[in-house]
Image (cartoon, rainbow, N blue to C red):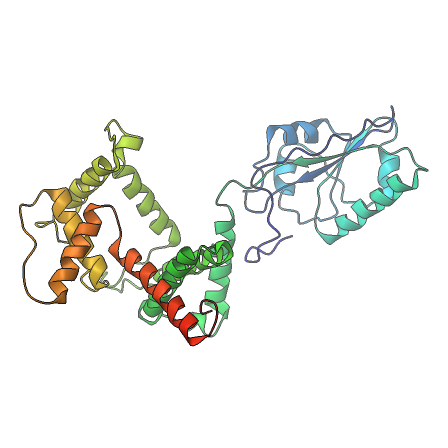
Length: 353
């Protein structure tokens, strides 16, 4: 039985049709290996799985603690707790019988290897062999493993168990920059890893938030979980996309952006288009964000004029934003080219690692 906090090997996101099994000689029967995902609630099985279980001549499982067993008993499916070897299983199918086997770990590999050896020997009339997915993972199912692993690490790891929101804040910034770098490098392997690192920060903070103590007077921090985070995000996305989930119309990205800003202004009760813009972000990104809000909100304000490079950069950032260019990204790309030119002039070679 799989430990609830230890992810098993991933199962397919959806069942993949196997290669057709060659027709077995009449009377040799068939063996059905019924697989299930530990990420799906026990008892939730596909209709073909229930049909096969109800009509099988025998159902075998070597694990008396298999999570599906209580639900099979409730459905009136008799299960034998036997661990037959390959030849015994073949004999059990004689006369055209169907035997269903519920896999339960390493012991079943011995069985399947034995069946393969028998089939390869050519000395035995083999029954048909079918792999039937009783339940399988939907997209996003591996997130359940992530939550379970994070929960265990939080309980048992001396370093992880002591971390706070404040102590982790710097890592969120670092991981975000590493993600940007992976995108700029066009490195798909790095992108995969860095997305995982960013996701870890979300799950880590949500796990810490579960431990919040509201206090006896109820004035402390209210706990919340990763499900609360996901639920709030889903509600927000649905509410802010009425052109997808409702009756609103949006023909262009600008239509979507304008609606988004109007909705957020109502939600946040903002008095200015500048409300909610973090002033601590990099300067070019800040300037472009302000210019974008002004343009989308139709605020009649001119760019401030003044001496110095700051006002020149402000004008460049506003111009870039109007043209659909992220000035921060553009400057970083130019800076990376400059860095490569410096290294080439130094005779160092390729880009820095």
